[in-house]
Length: 224
Length: 197
Image: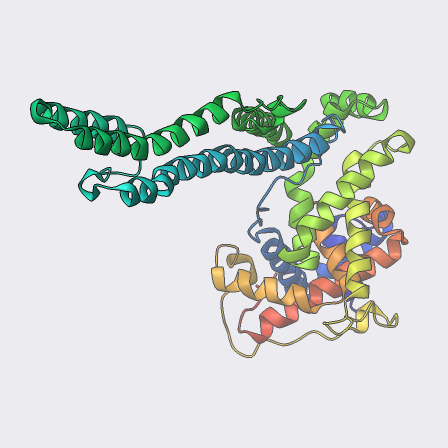
């Protein structure tokens, strides 16, 4: 009777002393069992020689880290993203009204232009819509100087024309003055109580601060 | 193979029992690789990382109630149980049979070598042989594979394996023998042989 079932335990030293002696005595007389024992020994050596797989990351749980660190990193990350969005939004809001007012200022000379041109001399068209006040004062003196230059022989009729021309230039100039006066005397809106919240710089600073917190906490969580 | 740490680990174990998280992390760091090796051989690489991490976290949570002396055996028990549970619940692979009905280990069949070939004992450095062994381990029943790995790879004694797998020593002995024999038979069928004592 071959003790095949005991060969592995014999190999591993897991038999009782009596069983071990019995198996050993059998092995001394049985070549087949010795062969089987050698095969089991070789198999065990092969299993022990298998390459050790390596995990792709650390598997030790971070139990020594304060429980609030991970939520803090998550909050800081999202807060940084929100602050960046608000920075961009406030920058657009801050820039857009200026662009509108600049466009509005540029359209005003074009509005008064037809009045002056309709009154008379088309050669006195202001060169640019932005050159709001310049054309009229320059036109008037030019007219005046021309008239003055020719004033030696100015006639009352010419003076009347000149006055008319000045009058024609006057309303536009007056309208400009009126508008600027209205602008100057327009009531200045009081700053909103939370105007600071519209400052792009505030949100940029907050975004950078939250990002820094997120990075520092993240490194702490990943440190060994 | 296995080296049970001495006094230093006992100190760490006492501190970990009292709630010292860093002491527990140090203990876990010492057995992280062997745990992953065991879980990978049981489950494959995909699920092994999660199984090990869950087992270590579970060990930390129940650290205060741990009363044994071998932290290593205790955590291996957690990992082995989780691996066996996961194998039983897998649906995409047919259930590997548990231990077949107990028959006399002496009567389990031994495959005969087809032709003379290299001896098994000389194949430890043979890549092909190691690959065959790795494939063979994946085909044997999970319970046998667990006991075989705990013995031949991790070096646990039969009594420790019985504690880890919550079985009798006789069952451990039978599973190790059957598992080792199954791998041996596959190697013999591939042309390898054992030396004549």
